[in-house]
Image 1 (cartoon, rainbow, N blue to C red):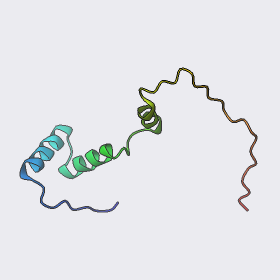
Image 2: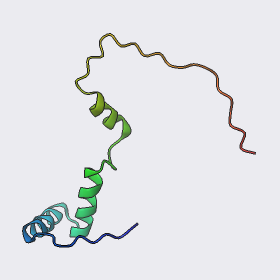
Image 3: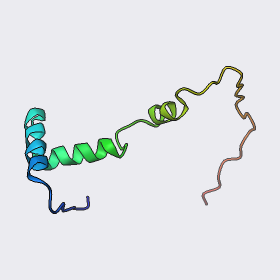
Image 4: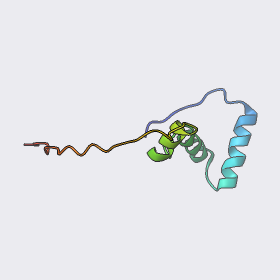
Length: 77
């Protein structure tokens, strides 16, 4: 993992981070990692992200057909 340093973090943000970390039973550093991972979508499943993208779209007249064309296996030699 790559290290990161956040400079000039406001005191109130630092206190809030430490309080939230305490509530979750982890260090402030672990809490920051969890917050960043969640915010950047690392922990989200692809299906959830696709559902969010298409949420609210009117798909009543949309028909999706699966491509059943046989494929040739890749030759890895």
